[in-house]
Image (cartoon, rainbow, N blue to C red):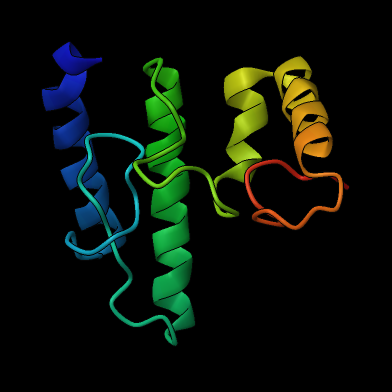
Length: 116
């Protein structure tokens, strides 16, 4: 994906301007390693725009054979993108491993894969 970095960075910069947001902090790491942070988490409009931007960037990364994960993993915010990236059989295997290694569900509960 390294050969695509300039295209990703350019598209990301356009998207950030479109959404009226600020690059700098710790948010979207799904594309170039640049990160984004909503400046005011109490501002519902800004949070919604940030979430829309995140979705757009993750979808772009996946379309370019990238990943939804970032330096800090999946957590809760990017769980919904794992199925499109890896497929349900891979998620079933991840769930089986999680249950086998953590039968009590005490290690990082509610993160990475939903056990539901």
